[in-house]
Length: 108
Image 1 (spheres, rainbow, N blue to C red):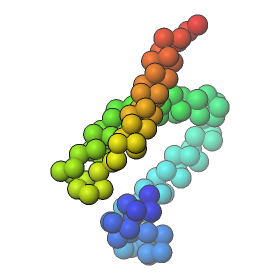
Image 2: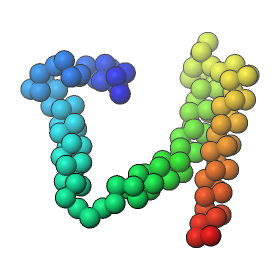
Image 3: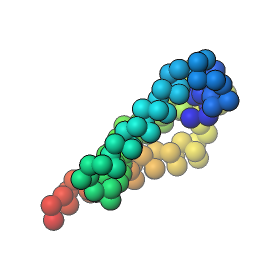
């Protein structure tokens, strides 16, 4: 988040009037969290589901990152070396196996 805020020129050091979208995002997320305190939502169940969704969503994101990080046209001299490329694809495969395993054992 620090890199994104630096690129956009917004950060907590700026006054809210100069970084409305940045502070608006923080205020919205804080408000949603505060409102959730007054709902019957089980926080442990919400934590479980957010982890499950993130685990499934991570697979295509990791694949796209690996494709981009391996491409010399995109990364130039910073493209992944063979060892890091192998480790990255191994991690993406492990995440895919974990997601498939989750769906395969669903309801067991």
